[in-house]
Length: 51
Image (cartoon, rainbow, N blue to C red; front, side):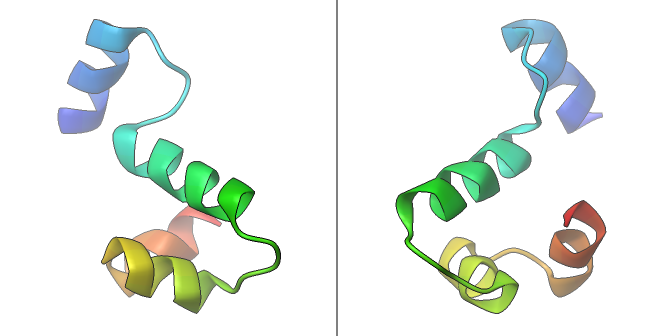
């Protein structure tokens, strides 16, 4: 529901968490999923589902 509300309010293609992951990957020059997950404190299952 949170993702739906975010997309509806901001009319974006990505949820807030997805946007955070994309931004983090963009800002780093070479990183692993584990590094991104730890930096953003995202659940392991969520990050593997998203990638």
